[in-house]
Amino acid sequence: MYFWRTDKLIEDLKQNRVSQNEFKNYYLASSIIVLLGIFASSQIEPEELKISFALFLINLGLLISWTNAIFKANGGAQGHAFLNRIIALYLPIMLKTTAFVIVLYSLILSIFNRFEADFDKAQFAHIKTLISMAVDIFSSFLVYWRICAAVKKINCPQAAVKS
Image 1 (cartoon, rainbow, N blue to C red):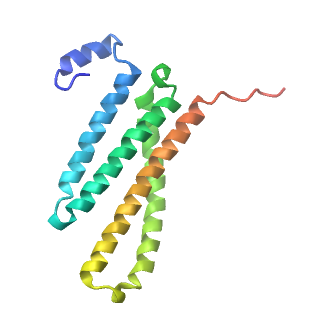
Image 2: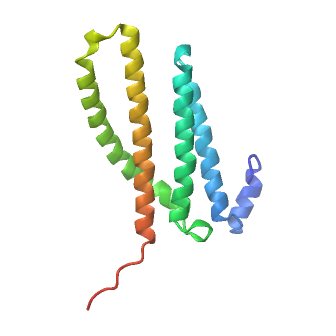
Image 3: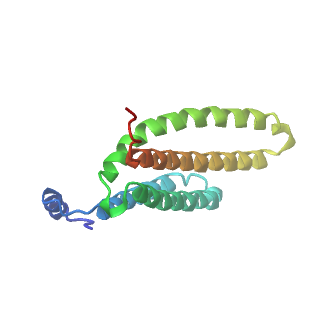
């Protein structure tokens, strides 16, 4: 893997010397950097550092485990177009998941907001943060799971056509 030498990577890509496993590792490395960026940008309130760090670690675990599961579902090192498939599947699955999660999150918050008077402001804000964290983890899990299921369908041999 090249971390800085794009000229050498371009040459290896031209010569088809980048393996499916290396493509997977590039995707993982890029995604980890994105997660680190999200984690860093979420550090507005210092008292929420533990929650943000926990969320980062959970998302990191989901990213690594699901990427490896999707890689295996795609046929592992003998698979075809791993990244192309993930990238293509990501958009529609993310859009569907986002719509579902918005409805779910709105429903949860509307129920939770009815109990606002039972908590002081700090408790209420903390619980809302935890709910948001749980919904974030759930939505990430859902997206990875649906991509994995879709890749398995792509690689599933067609049933014999009856004549």
